[in-house]
Image 1 (cartoon, each protein chain N blue to C red):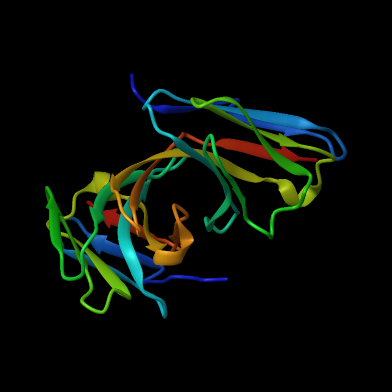
Image 2: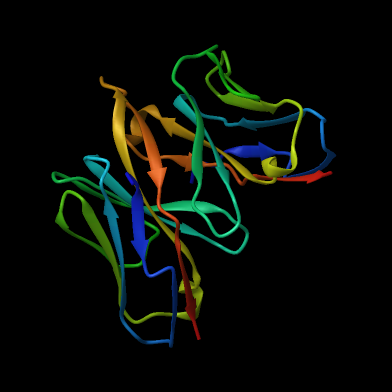
Length: 112
Length: 118
């Protein structure tokens, strides 16, 4: 089935560093969503993107909907220890109704 | 608190048993979902359901069935549990944020139920 390629799979960074992760697909999406999952919890919606080229920020987080509609990236500036977790991209295909396809996740570890 | 809630948080059971996981949302959303997250953290949609339509992921065994007593609840019934069913199951709900032919949805997740089949 349709998959999103999310990279990197994991990152181990120093507190204060900026982080970048991205998702790519061979199919066109009409919506991109970015989630964060803490251990033992459900994914929490961070940012939603609806238009090609759209750039949206949420605090230290910034995400963009790629012009080709086949990719998206998420940046985290000045990382802090509580940024630790797994970040997922999710896309909605035009012909998939309300169904989301998820990337494999990026596990972020921050060293104080 | 407005949220998606699930019970139980943990479920340990033996092979062959039948079990249910309950989900409730008080967000007023029309559509609810069940996801399975495997040991590698990969999230896979199982069902999408609103009061008009059930969409089933064709890879889901028919031992799994969603039951919705009303718009705010979507329970997951699993018959004849197998070892491979061990996973974390998430309920979610969504609202339309951009109506239209290709409507956009934002999905909100519950805290998950960790199912262990022994």
